[in-house]
Image 1: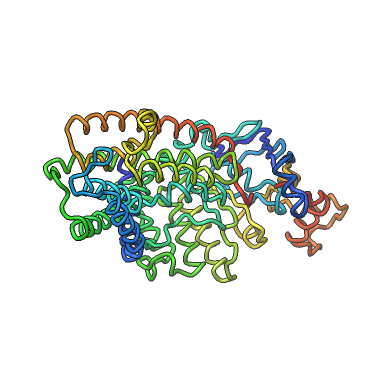
Image 2: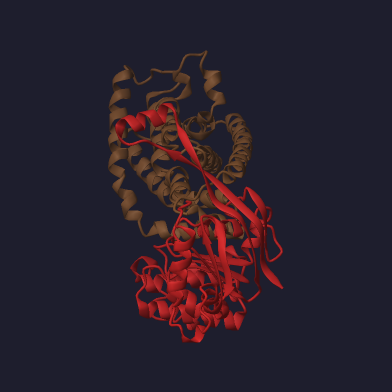
Length: 263
Length: 281
């Protein structure tokens, strides 16, 4: 475990040098939120109206939270770096070390979002308070449970993205699959909560990673309940176990297929 | 005692084939074709502990593929490999503690960190305590003369300085076998000479087994006592540096080898030509 902590710390040190670059992405986040504030402002005719069980403030805060997770956890290392390591041959250096390559990447990824996410949390809180106002019934005492769900959600997302990247052992470019996964998460989990979709689709959507990656953590932030929290945590742990098992299996099989470019 | 034992090692790759132009690209999507390439074909050799061996051959001869099988990165299709008595395919992690690798054309250092931070990082990866890592870094920094740039981010170092740091990073855990894949590529003659003396010193003082691949005859002549030449995935020559010239000239029918001014480069070129430079990978 110590070595993964060291990897995490090294990435943290490296990323802290580029904290200013992270701030450059704030504009994109602001534009997204601005559009959604206007959109939902138009959709809600009265302040008391509920859409899919969400008040206007809850709906906008939901989008702000999911977008915050999306922008704050830009998973470059799990998406592009793994595929790049395999294609470019750098994996030769990374594999013959006394650590597990996939856990090395996960530790790196955690170091990356540890710098980015807090910056986006601060930005989301400021924008939210100014443009929407405080989140009604927000449970400050449950912040630790929300944080735990967010961390687990980000880790599950990384594990699934890594599973896709590891297909680079077989195919030359796994980017189209990454694109499909990202768009699925974006449309179904980030832009709209699951409750917006038809009743018949909802149980199906709750079986996908969307429930654990973005919908679950964001739902807890805007409408916390201990029962919901427990349910999401249990599903996240199950998803993490299955995801990790899948990731290790794909890596084990893939590594035998490795062809290092450039000799 | 033997540090490396290789018996009948083989590795085949399937490489995609594509005809020229747009039509070729479309055809490759509809009917993908692959070509089977024998990168390593029945290679056998042993390396003694503390030996410095040159494992050379033309581009695509199978040198790097062999190194990658010895270090557990690639899985052989056939044959047996043992490095320090460990099978790299079965116990790669265990072997990782005992070996070091330097691939001259790839980077292992984190470019935004200083060499010192990199060494501390690698020390932790190899389970060295903070005290052990500190002592080792001090020792290697002195030996490799890193004092003036150990606290400069790697991205700001010259190539020669970076390669010295790459080698130090590979030595932090006192490996028993060091695999050097073209470690002096792109370096100027003075820096090359400096790197060679440091490798020799390390071999002398720590009894590290050196497995070197290089296209630089100077590296081979100055560092190695034995040479293996591979071509098209097969060993075509395995001899001691001392006897190489004598055996080569005897093969050519020249009796007075001392009188001949044939160089190592001439011999290597001749062997390459005689065997045909069939590119494998």
